[in-house]
Image (cartoon, rainbow, N blue to C red; front, side):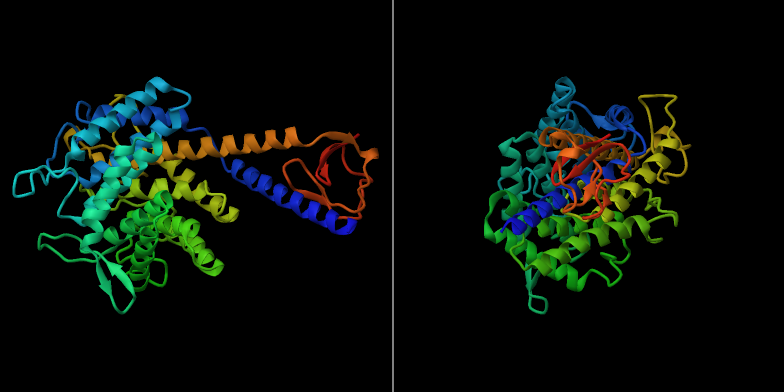
Length: 455
């Protein structure tokens, strides 16, 4: 019995050491601190592109566009992430960003659909384009997660229940659901830019409500997409675009957490979450061939695609359920892109700063041609890199402190070590069981769950 208890204790310690080692692995990926740079970038984004009395964004520098709707979701997402990063350490700044969320909501995210019912009633966020409503709904959920404001969640749930999912059609071949791209006759769909966010919305609604119908919707939307739209090499669609790669990857990550399916299916979701996101950062279809996300186009839609991918890539990095080697891979790729973009920014006219469509080159065009989409993509990259680095640093420091608090240092002479491996403070094994402490360099080690001082 004593032997069994000893083995159990050792296994428990080994798991803890592995967790600490994982945090240390991520911590060592941090190349520099981007928090101050992100703060400057978010401020430049607001000053250059936001209509501040409405909380919505111009399509180009000082040029408003009535039909710019879905892009408002990703522009506001940047503000929400910055709010989350500062809501504990800078309440004045956070409250300003929170007020922009209120304005954005009250102005219906610039929904151009307007009075769409027979009696002229304004329908908040309803739109003929299903994908537009999906992106807006995801941002409403993000605003709810960040602030706890119930009306954002209520609105998101209503949009999905009353409009999005009611457009779905059962597919007998796959057992799945597909959604039309729009209802105004310009094209039926289905396509990845509708299926991917809808799958993610359903999974998140289940995560928050625990209502089984949402998990069922998520699995059926996923089933159709994976069997009819996704390609064998992890392209989510042809052509592969960063925003749908990232969104379907995030949907798989959330499904891993919420599904009631087998462990094998859960593992599949975990692997696919990495594969879809990694494809965006490594394939020559989505990059310049050197792991820098490419210029996907210069119109307001195309230029904002990267702003959708980046936050979901960071969510993957910060998820301890994902494999540490995969998290490190994505963290390194994100930072490579961030350094490239930042090197090519011109701060001479701050707060007027513009991002190029190609992150390897500075913006050299005229002010009137500067794109909100391109600026949103660049700002999202800086803000989410700062979010990633802050979280990794804080997690590592917390694990270090927990380890410090939980383990009492005792002299090596007072502990028998021949039944236990010896680990460094950050979780690396330096001696296997039975090797003992002879000739071990001076320092602190973990032996049998205790901090041991070797002099």
